Image (cartoon, rainbow, N blue to C red; front, side, top):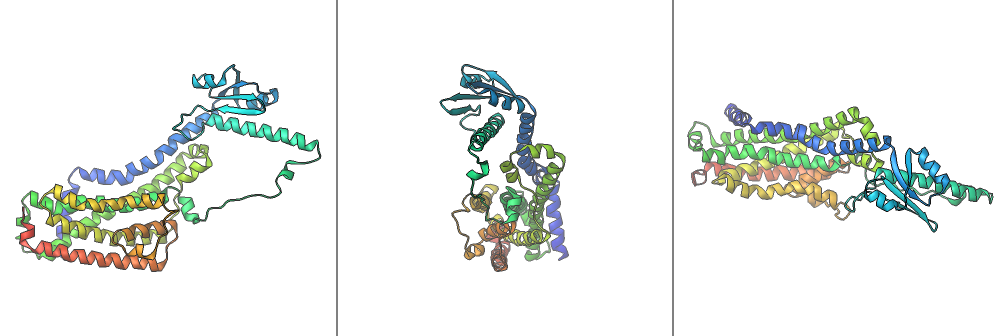
Amino acid sequence: MKEALKIARKELLTYVREERILLMVLMPLVILPLLMNLPFLLLGHYYQQAENKQQVIAIKGVPQELQHLLQRAKFVVQHSQNPRQAVQERQADVGMVYAEGRYTIFDRNSILNQQRSVATERTREVLQQYKEQVLLERLQSHGLELADLEPFAIEIQKTISEQQQALGLLAMLIPFAVVGLVISGGQAVALEATVGEKEKATIEALLSAPVAPWKLLLGKGLAVVVAALFSAFASMAGFALGNVFVRHNFSTQIEALPTDIRVQMGAWALTSTDLATIFFTSVLFAFFVTSVMLALGIFARTYREANTYLSPLEMLMLIPFLLFAFSDYVQVQDWFFAMPGLGVVVAIDTIVKGSYSPWQLGLTWASTLAYGLLVLFFAFRNFSREDVVFRN
């Protein structure tokens, strides 16, 4: 066992001494959380500025009473013969015309931007307030109230778990980060430890050392597993710390966001049990992926050939996005959890959403361990065969 640990240490040190270790650390801890939170911060800053700034509204045919309401809402009212043109030429932030019993609001945003501008939303709110005011006056003249128009209330509730609602986009990003970074984090170390040794012509010296092939395989495998798990859980730490940091230090920008966008941003809501379950599932997945990478890496003759063999494995990284996009159309079955690779993705997805069952997790763990042991056997056979190790 000491020999295997020495080999694992040697492989990790070889990787750490290279510049790629910076990417291995920075990507999960800094880059991914930054890419996730920066758009929300910029959008929140934009909404905050828009809320505090006086918006210019170009109007035509608007009653005096509504003009007073607009001014109270911090609008600068500007009379115009053509409010639409005034908005197009950026002389006004929003335009409004009243004609033949209809109010028309002119929005500045392009057709590609489906989100209405802040000025448009504020104008619509003032117009709704004025509409309710006029309606109340008419109802009161007949001895009625606004409540008489609504005999009952309508409420729509999401059936997804509270944990998934609280996580927002994190419910999709966490499975993607764990699966994707286990694969990408371990791949570089695995290829360097196998086909990299071939290309540098050091594999012969390594195999001639007085170390059993299984210890050599175990040492290299440990190094790959450590690198893969480090990348995956550094990303989860980055997401958690980044979310807490942003919510603590940029609370005003977050509060300025519309409710639907704030819900999408999400908050860290995983329990210690969830984290422990994800960790154990990821360890088994890293074991399976490492076995595949070592088996294919020692079989390949060049880096290019090895990357060709491993490219189907990278397709697993897209599955969390597909599950998120088609969750309303795909009914997850129990046999999904027994499929190699896919079962782990589905299991982590259900853990994050709080909808897993012990039977499904047990099926994933047992099948992943079985697949890993099977592929590890083939990896050991490849390491033991000279016609595979020395082929070129």
